[in-house]
Image (cartoon, rainbow, N blue to C red):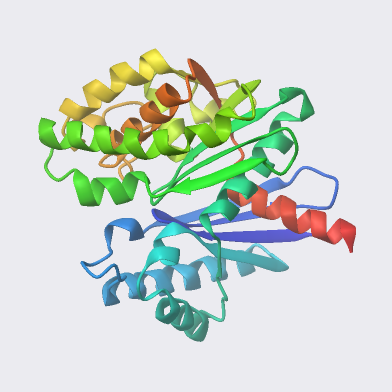
Length: 310
């Protein structure tokens, strides 16, 4: 069957169309995305403004048309941090449904972590042992760890790259004092949850998903995306620390000249690097591996599992 998974995230509205069946690997057919950066469009009251809602509705409608053009027989639509935490979330969801017919399922932060963990486990297999996962989105940081397909511990922290950039890093480049203050506060939030994971014992393998980690790994020398998903890509803590310092001094125009950095993410990359560095430092991770599957694949896999169980 042909499935479309529609991810209304904090940075993009992303449609992934795949050919899928229970027990088989989903095969990508088409990918379509629109850059919205909803995490940066919240007003002082935490609401998505009228122009942001207009753009969201238009993007969902466009994605729906693309899914239909590619013959998707079922759409799996969901929303994450930006919509979940908007003070006018109910009104936004009602309008999206009224104008497009799409009913967005709002995932909790813990759901995001669990589904992303499922995708990473399926990609890496049981031989990965105890798996520790990090995912940095536009609105939140997800951390999960466990031996099975469902993590033993999963948390979500409000440390997304888009959210932190909009709230804490004005200026181009931002002032050093602002960077130091954000670095300190991020580390405080991450440190507060480390104990929940350390009780499980050390991880056998550490992986990261999300565009932020992929771009950080790329500027540190990892293979290009054009070389395919099966090429091993890693990010070391030492390289990350070096690049965090460099990014803090670079204006956005210079970041755009770095390999693999997209226009929609260049401004957020410093905040993402600070979050990634805090996670690797406080969890004592010298190096991690980039996993090509993440939340969207997890949603697809969960749907296929339920079909097989029916």
